Image (cartoon, rainbow over all chains, first blue to last red; front, side):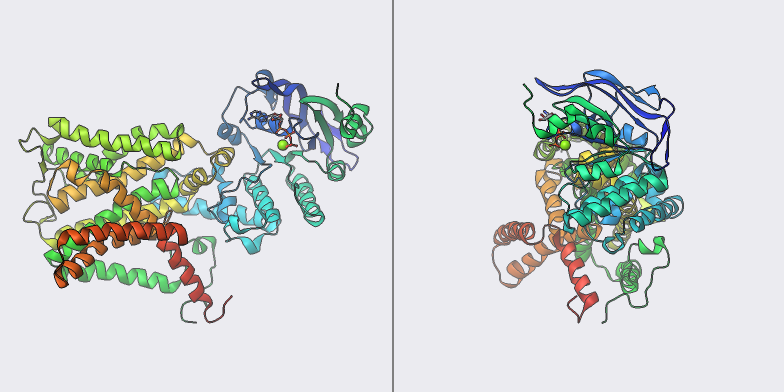
Length: 269
Length: 358
Ligand SMILES: Nc1ncnc2c1ncn2[C@@H]1O[C@H](COP(=O)(O)OP(=O)(O)OP(=O)(O)O)[C@@H](O)[C@H]1O
Ligand SMILES: [Mg+2]
């Protein structure tokens, strides 16, 4: 397994993009994450599941630098990552969406997704002031990439709409668009389908699979809908009360007794 | 059917993101520029220049500046008056220390010096937000006014404690000093207004502008797309203070000619500029102009009508002015929090579709 594997549907999964080693995260007395290790491999869709308060979101927050674990280390592309700010981690090619939508409410769909290009835009403030020339060219080039994202997510009609005016499901889609525009190496999705109806969930699942398939993007997602998780993910980490209680393919996890207990609410004595 | 984009198709992304997407708007803008540059200077008189046009131009620069910081980047500042004072005193020191330096360069350098001071006072913005930041900038306001009163070096040890502007010329025309003509002063300010509005528009339409707005709307999401909060906020403080510093330099050197720091750049001025952007429209270039025009023209109008025509005592009109401003701010905050500029956008949108409701 150390050099990757081939999925049942024939995709080749590569080496470790990210490796979490013995991560422990505490908030005062609360232990949100307790000595957890797992890895995310190149090209795979990795799910993190678990009951409410299990520490899933905290794990994403550790990966993208909002939280700094008290113990353990994180390896990115095989190298130990020193403590970094979220914006520095973003520059390394990690993008994400939030459990509670975090869009820029005062801006249009287009501008929101354009912000995702921030790391790819390099013209300095003087060029930006003059605009004509390098800045305008760079804007047009990046606009082209953003338009592809807009086409991909089928949101052409709301291009110029302020995002605050959009229904919930579309806002989730725009937020995914912003993350995709960054063309990340690793995409973190915190409950991308929460609060959606069946049709919207199907659309979102299709987008996630297509992103992975067309651009080879490595994806880690948190999701409560077991049907979706089992359908789209290659490997699953199961958390409960901050601990890892299962890790493996959907089939392995489904038959894991500790996982079944956690989901059936067996007393945790 | 009159005002719309029929036949005005966009063939490229650059065309789609231009400043005035509609032909009609573009023509109106060019016509306005032509009148401002080619007609007004020849018909302008001292009254119009000093009561309306020059103050409007200078306050427009200040309100553009504050709008960049507050409207676009979401950082409230009550230090505008103090930063204008920095621009004014910087221009005074530069004019008196380097008598041969071109006045345009002096004004721009004054802006640059104010930008540096703005960055220093913007440092707390990494840690504190909203109301508390407003209080910190208020402290900057009082500190700066105190400093320019206290340290005699700033006013070259003059007995009155005031600074007064020597005569400086550009292309052979006096721009500052008691004998400068109204049209020369007007044109000098106009060039700066047009140039700076263009810069403001360009900065707010691209990468930097979007990073300001991202910080304004949701700072944690801004960070995950790679925006460095401190750098972004400080850039906004720098650019904003540059504009405000230029406005202060013009206010002193070109418009007033002599300045007492407490009277000219007191806390009321910080509020005045804040009211301009609230009424005109936060996060809008056009709104900055509308707000400045409104708060410059309205008092003049009130005074002319009430004192000039009705013969009321003049303190009456200044009280009424305050009441009207207060009322309008409440009205905009309640009815249209994005100011008159947004009202204008909505009206235009309706006009485009007229006579069909959708
Ligand atoms: N910033 C914080 N300060 C204090 N406690 C926190 C913080 N963030 C998370 N926690 C705690 O850590 C634990 C795990 O929370 P987390 O949000 O990671 O759970 P989750 O698995 O994402 O749950 P859900 O499915 O409800 O989203 C909870 O007990 C929570 O209260
Ligand atoms: Mg969560």
